[in-house]
Length: 190
Length: 315
Image (cartoon, rainbow over all chains, first blue to last red):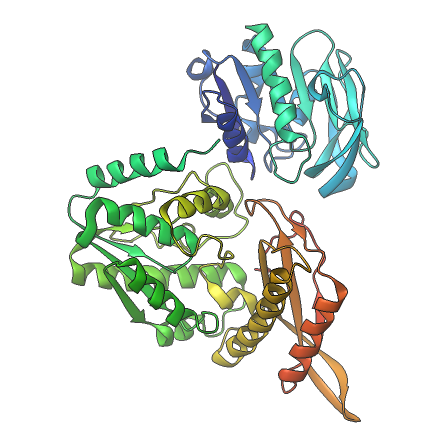
């Protein structure tokens, strides 16, 4: 199974690569300017986080939009990756009323596919200045924290997922399991 | 998960194929550079010279400990005293990024001299993933310029060989245990050393203060952890702050310096939470620093910030 990590310049992009490798996946890190053709053989994509503000600085998100339009495979957007995905499909991203850096407790929906077999509440690690203010109509919110209404989203029909927090970070509880759940979805989709 | 045996085999082979003539390795005696040294030594043996630079910015007894370890490892090594050079270069500099760049450049100049003398074209470094990630690139912001990546001057004449670039420290420790490297569990210590634990200008006097404070913090925490009173933190040290405050010593007013105690729990250094040090240990640290270092320090504070939003070191 090939799952590529699209590098949007995150501090933890390389950790996503490490987690995928630990899970036995064939993976590589691809800069977000790479042409779609170079990643067309992927079975799934991860859109990493990064310092660009999606609303103000979308240019620095490179070809993420093209990947989302052309790829028919499952995609997981993390942090800025999720914010971009949400904005791309008609949502709105804006500076967070209260940002979250480090430890955050999230509450997840019972039927969220990425959180299958996980507790309803757990600790994650986040690091974001912006937040998704309005979710596109084809998506639903599947996790929240005390100060951030949109901690996770999933598309109602397509295998598109977004996480505001960072499952690849050691301090996040159940991070590896979230990746496993995503890979199960990828496996089903193939 | 992580296969140390396979990794070492691959990297020894790669070192053999890449390094055709002599090489030097920048060896601080920490786990990363020591593991890199052992791997490359396995590949090219006597064609490798391990260079330990005494920057004058090291911890108490560090040079002697590293020398003894290099001796036990049976490596071809050399210790270079460059402390005057480092203190001169750091004069008047307060900006943390400037400090890191000046130190990075000094290291490279020393290595270039040693490489010329040894006839080496390659510089081996124990660079690991967080070093280049935090140093920044075309896509990534610079969080801090690690001396061995972002601190390297553009005109360096040496070629780099960095076998551990894609690893994090927990993985390097697995290799270290596999290779029987004795410093496998040693806490991380930054390349710019105590220079980035002195906020503000670096001079011999300030370095001596933070060196003594670091020693007390290490001593108390290691003693407590060995007794099972607390878990071994990932990293634990003192920082000298550019802040003075009022105190009272034997009914006399004093106006002294402030030391911050920093201790964190982490797996890979890329995220961290502050250590839950028991209050009796914190109090012992505070008492020892303010009593044993009464001429300089009259206040001790504890840093309770996670990473993010803070980083582990203060600069």
